[in-house]
Length: 76
Image (cartoon, rainbow, N blue to C red; front, side, top):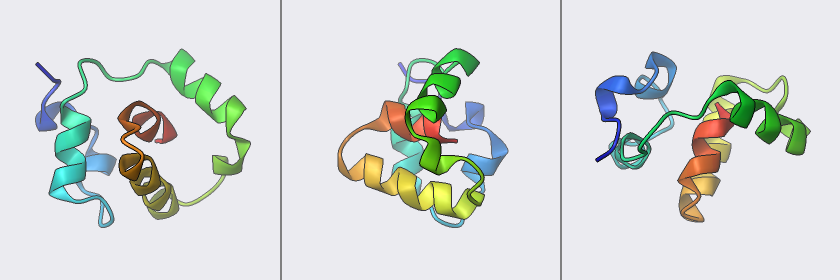
């Protein structure tokens, strides 16, 4: 069972870019990524440093299309 939509951070739940389906996919994750996972993702993908939240959410949709929900969450 996933973490549920209520456990998602507000900046994700209130996104003007992510759809209900996108939120559902994130809510199905068993755990939220920890800071170590997020730091590693950013180190491996420095192009995401300093971009606006809406732009990050647009990139997240690319990960959704690849069925890469784990990296979608770590992008935040």
